[in-house]
Image (tube, rainbow, N blue to C red; front, side):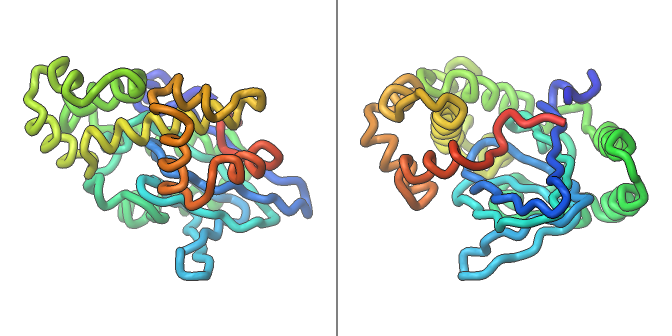
Length: 265
């Protein structure tokens, strides 16, 4: 569902998923990307691969903000959650935690918002209807929205990279924002913990993967070159470095199973 007007510049959507009684849901791999996704579980929470051979249980309310590695989620029954999908660069409007500290893994609502976050989780635990939960979450976001950007230039730059990652170079972005390249990089790092080049690469990668998952007729070579990769080999190397397998292996699972693209309440 679309968020209320006051949140729309910062939140792309609220969405959710509820499994059938007794259904075991095979959950997808969460890939690196530009987004930040805030989950509130009223069913069983996710368990995610901690990279050391085991699985770690997420909190009832937590944030995924994958930048450098993917997360494999364990299959589960009793699935039920509502999620908030933030627009690129906009999680910083809601929490003062530095961008680099948000990268990768699972970050609890209590850690990000302290007593306010714990109070929200308490109220959600008593809610019995989806509309109640959505209203509580939206009210919390509105109350924690920072009206002034911590760096409006970086916000504008990230939006431009997201829309034009395939053709917009970092030097061209700097010129468009009336900054030197080094100054632009310093400001990006201060807000996001990433350079403009890293953000550009993630935007390009994310767009190609989304295109391939949602369009089963799409082929990696065409999708990759359309989004700014030199050729399919270039995309394959980037994909393996970020995910740990070749695109075909991932796509076979994603297209036949579940994914988190374009899902709404």
